[in-house]
Image (cartoon, rainbow, N blue to C red):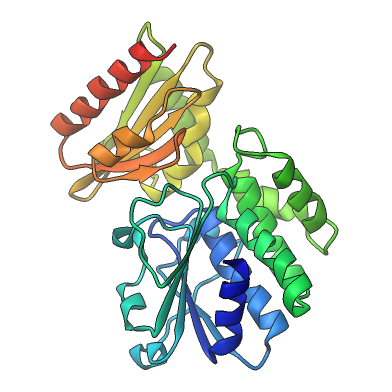
Length: 314
């Protein structure tokens, strides 16, 4: 499959890369990291990366704004996106051929070519694997720009290599990538430094989260609370892992109100939670998933379901 993807990249003059809405470092890392790889090895090709920019990821890169006409006869590559509903920029359907590269469960097998590896720590790790195959098969070279983005994506999706998803392959890939000209300090600062207002909000979370005897915890962040701390819904992504430091916690959910919906961010230290996310129009990994609620009453249903999961967990 990797060689088929490389052959498709060779075949097309225009290549447009997409990723999921509400991007995280792995979304940018895999999407724009692959774009940099293609640019480095095929400088004659026209390569675009699209999707709404998230200001919290400005330290990594910026996507591009392009016209509809660019999609004509273009190769479309979608990275780190499990289902079509989450693809940022619906114009992906205007392309000539679609490739899906992802590490989430393949519940929506879209695309003309699909490479899905749920054992990969991140989609950025998969792009590094594609590079390794390209090096053998097509003489690919790694650029500093691509290495920087792929390393950031791997670090982001493994929680700085703390998550069980980080395997020996993950460490080998990271070990190779850090040999390139990467300012790791600047990357880590961009990923993990927080403004004081977010540290204050983190303090609020620690003071107000609720945890039961089964190790299930939750915190609700309505708009009034976000406004109190001058925080945006997207900025709270930096705080989702905060409750992971709580002793005896098994799984937790953070609810963030955003306009007419409520973001549901689920995390776990053991119980499988992605099936719960699917129940509420979401999905993700077994230990890290997201969903959407449309009322605080529905959020309470999520809490009850997560309680049941934690209670049954051995």
